[in-house]
Length: 359
Ligand code: IPM
Ligand code: MG
Image (cartoon, rainbow, N blue to C red):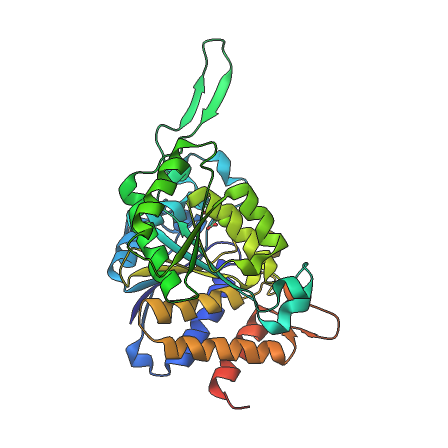
């Protein structure tokens, strides 16, 4: 297994270090594992004068999978796109055509009390947000700033989807639903946007090839309401890049903390990038208080999707569950009566649980 480790900025290096520890522990055989580290984000600028250095891109391309931490520095939206640390991830996704972003939101029973929602609303929650990741208003052209005839400045972007882009994410979504509870909800804004009308048409067409999957459609505003009102109605939600960005943060909070949510971004085959959904969290960086579980669970997704090892995925899930049952909590999921631990201690606890599963 050749894995590119792109830890990046902020809490990225801290949580990635714990994820790597867990990866090594679960694989056991160190000869089977080749880890290649490379800088990205501000770390890329510091090392090579580029947030996405060519060498990093080459290392990422040559690997079987990428473990990504976080990239960006506060206020970097002022910096032009090509040199902006926070945009390095977007460029990497685009370069590697990582169009299918899996963001599962699963409720660990031990954390039901950490959610801001009532237990009966979130207990047993298991939903998958599949977000299209390389199209939409994130990458649509034209984009930029301009000055109108009357001398006023404008910022503008373009929301655009081609049929082929919608088709390929639709197929991934229907196949994912088939392997789960057989329900797919396509989320868009077809009552207002042409882009969404096309999205819906394509989903209806592709859906005819999957008569065993129940296809429904929901406008994004209603979907955001339903996610907090009755999230258990959903099995697989498939949506575009910007709506998926917003809805997946919301879904993360259902499970207690964004510090718990892993993700996988695939290019259609086994190759993928795995990252926690949370970002750099500069306010808590370097303090050993960040929750490494999203990064650790991202490794579990990697072992399942890129290396076809659901057994290793299962071991990590079981270890995380055992650690939570022992009462270990980082600050973001802390509840009175549980034991507050730091980033490293949480990682060590998961490693220990992997080594002694029957404890
Ligand atoms: C995410 C993040 C990124 C996005 C940012 C960091 C560019 O919010 O992965 O959800 O908007 O896609
Ligand atoms: Mg986001």
